[in-house]
Amino acid sequence: MTTYKEIRGTQIEAVTTDPSNPIEGQVWYNTTSNVLKGQAATGAGSWSSGGNMNTSRYYHAGFGASNDAAFAVSGQTSPGGPNTNTETYNGTSWTEVNNLNTARGRASGAGTTTSGVVFTGTEPDGSGGQTPTAKTELWNGTNWTEVNDVNNPVSAHGSSGASGTSALSFGGSSPAPADSAKTESWNGTNWTEVNNLNNARSFVLGGAMGTQTAGLCGPGYSYNSSAPALNTEIWNGTNWTESGDSSTGGTGRFGLYDSAVKVTGTTVEVWNGTSWSSGTSASNNITSRSGGGTNSSGMVFGGEPPASGNSLTTSEEWIGAGVAQTRTFTDS
Image 1 (cartoon, rainbow, N blue to C red):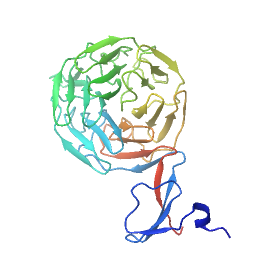
Image 2: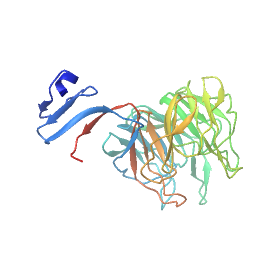
Image 3: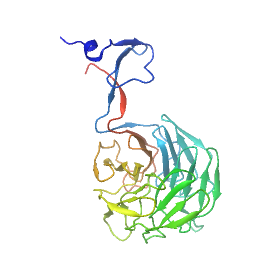
Image 4: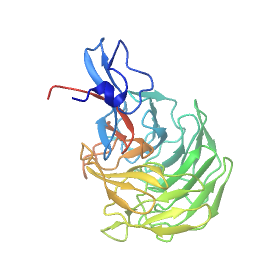
């Protein structure tokens, strides 16, 4: 009979703390928690519950490098309207940090928890309604500072970017019910109009996907049609090119131009750079979420039960296919 030592070349270790950098296939016994553990790779990707936000919201700006470094900014609260609340996530819990200067809903953003930018969206117009704003705010890791405005104020638009000084804004409504195809590029100081999307659309917000020179515009919705706008377009730094369509709309999204995740209620689609395919379903039927991270380590947060207008604090974390993960062995 073949033994584990013959297969792996070592015995199962007994340790008081889990190894800091285990390799795939490694197995150990934790004498502190009295459990047997091993290192494995995920299959089709998996979801797990994350910590709840302090402020419930939907149609908010979301971005970040991973599911342990995400950012939730502004958004709609119910009851109430646009807010200025800003929170960061460390993989376990959300922490309130300094607020935006201008309350807004349906905004987008890009960057990281130490260098980010939030732009446009809608702000209260003083008469009980909301109007698109051109305002841009820059995050330095501690505070928000108002900087130069966008050229074309929009709301419910898409974004991509790696930092607060390098971002892209595209699509949206300007104002409703007009869908926009306009694209603007941010260099840390000014916004510059660049080539338009091929297909105008709104509600492409929900988490930055890509960078300023390699962006992804996923599906959204159109004010001029009851059906979702399912087109996907890739940005190469100069032009947008149409690529594979999605099966659903949805605002909870995160990732890069060649590997991204999109969530619509519990329906999940994964982008491989060419086409969308079905992914592991999310646990909660929530719409109007935002997201942050990459295809290997991302998350969605906030949102509302479908068509309810009730803002939520819920978070779900995503681990992508093939990512190493520590598993605990049980008797069942």
